[in-house]
Image (cartoon, rainbow, N blue to C red; front, side, top):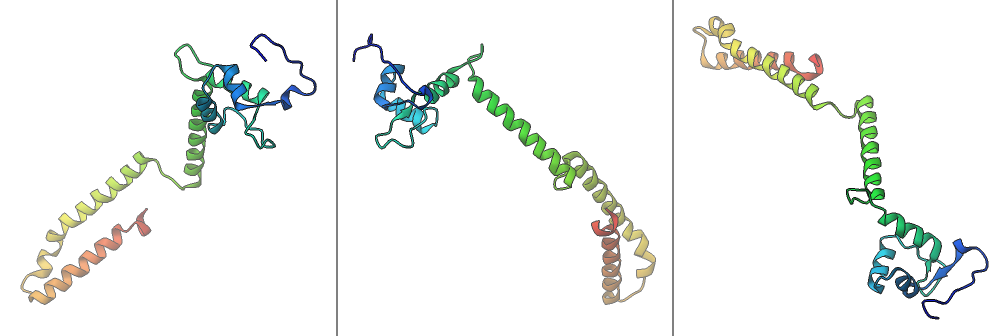
Length: 163
């Protein structure tokens, strides 16, 4: 069959399958490129064919849709898929935030900063608070008093009780 010959198709054109070689000739592509397009699921393999034929209608539709470009040269369908993925990820993040599974970084940072500020304030105040209690005490007792005060301060600052 030459390039100018016509073929009569009887039956459903959506069910017609052609060889990969025929598809390569029709699209003016190499056999390797046609195989790549099959692997990329742009060209649809005929699952009932043992010889690796492709579904004509679905393959041509997918091929031309994959080549459709915007004015900027970007693949329309690829960009649309990326946009849809980003929308899905945002929706998933919003749902996780509503469920309390994730937290806003700014809120977390503010809470942590507040806790650290409280911690610093408590620690810097320990010297003045304990100075009179520790005067003239033996070293072992001083250590016990400081340890007890540190433990009490840490309990006051624990996230379980405060936040």
